[in-house]
Image 1 (cartoon, rainbow, N blue to C red):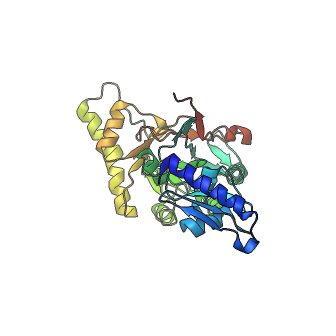
Image 2 (image 1 turned 60 degrees about the vertical axis):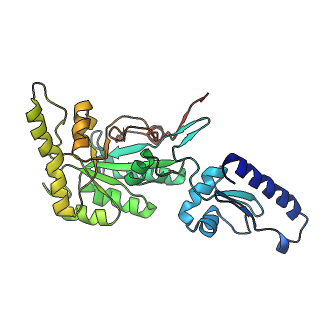
Image 3 (image 1 turned 180 degrees about the vertical axis):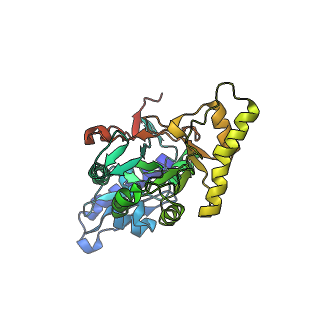
Length: 331
């Protein structure tokens, strides 16, 4: 039994037992209604939460989002019937009324006070991170997002990805503590010419430590120059420059961190077809631009969008970068 017909049968069975349960002593009331290969229908017990149900039936409280998303709820009441999906039901994120979007946010520098558009005040960053937590957003890893574009993973409906560009030392002082406190991860895209280059830059030991603590390191080229083919640049000149900008950082990451990244953020978000081809040839599986919109599962993996978060944004403006669903009338 599977799919919509199987679920309908399960729910009807659960509903019938729920009516019966009303007339039974509390000790006799059913705690589990039915299981199939795809779903479990159960009644919540006294003291149950979506986390405890996920732990009991799915073996992982971290999968509570599956119960929340499928049932459209964030909490359960005693005796409430709950459908628990045992496996992904829409890895593509496409539904009858539209499709899921995953926003990818990009930050640069953080300081005690804002300075220009790209140096954000620490208090503003903290406010934004607490907003995500308070409003039920789930910060996922970049690997999760890449798996999603390959239809290998279903994501929570309110997923968001955090990224930081260039490799500023301020990440350790201002971003790292609040991210660790909230249980969030982030990917750092660094250009190798900047690593260890002055007191404002992260060094290789910093990056190695962060990677071990669940903050992956991605490529951002060697020099942070515009990677697109220059006017009048020959095929051989372009190929040699891409060898320096795209391949040399991979070798350096491998030597200093023990692993070469498979993802890259285009400097300034600038890219074109010729550059995308070179990025693919050098073994990158995902690449990121700067374009203010979320990503469907069918976004081209070498043209994934990121929304720049500026220092002067109000919390209301920040929230506009968090659109997680595109309504669409599919015929």
